[in-house]
Length: 224
Image (cartoon, rainbow, N blue to C red):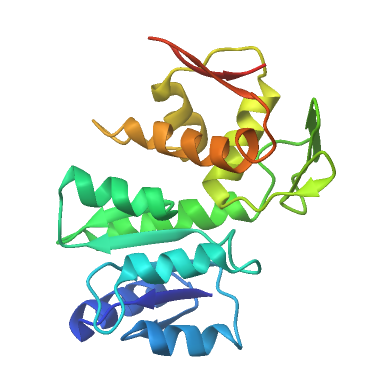
């Protein structure tokens, strides 16, 4: 099930029509109030969320989603009429998995939706148990524990951590991490990697007073 929160009825109905024509189950909402009311009954597989909404903006709604334990791992695509670097980074910084700027091509949106859903339906690799020092990961349960204490990660945070642990002691460039974790190129937007590294550091390194993620100046990032 895909939820789209968009106050423009023409855009909302177009996206819903296109998703259904692609054999994807979906539901639309005009604002955050309707959206959160339906969340009491249904947990979606993915959320398409407009930034400019009445009553409560999309970034505020996204922040609430990421703070809800049962919804924190749901992938979210942000829709925005703005194309500035600031808005893109702000959306990612709040926990968005992807963003697309209006006006957008419907086929591109459908492709991104399918790609994100596919990545959430299966483990990134064949092994289901990963570990590094005091970090333990169960990829099937989307579970991360540090020193026995659970850490809640959003989808891309989780996938980035898994990839780095699988290839520990290897330095990966931002471009490599974009390709391997995001699955497509953010042309000119490699700072998304820096944003998610910061997320992981705040949730693991800073919270547990350890140094897991290492920055290799001019080269990229590694674990170990």
